[in-house]
Length: 147
Image (tube, rainbow, N blue to C red; front, side):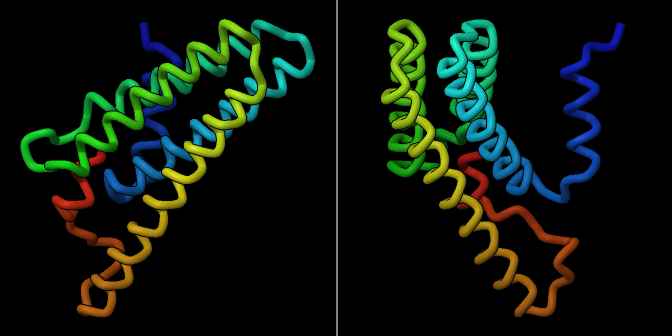
């Protein structure tokens, strides 16, 4: 029996060139899911709210577990603390049906996504300027600590 989540992961993974791009796509997903959760809250639909908050929690938990704590130093520690803060706020926002808290989480997730998107662009353009084909990006360990 193949699970739908596993099939979706394989479909997406086959279209993404690097784990850095996978990280950006996962963060884009968290933003979409928190927006859907807020829409569910606004519509009085606890099922939609809860399912989408659960998706965000699952992604953030996995991102936190994937951090390279041996190489990352204070950056990884700070990012892990931020992930834990987001998880706590999601739980509280879910329990209280508090759109303001969920809005705060959405802002944090969008900011993190934009930061990693910009870092990926900078790494990509640096590699292209070094005459490396853009489709053959080698992972940068410093950037990969978050993925």
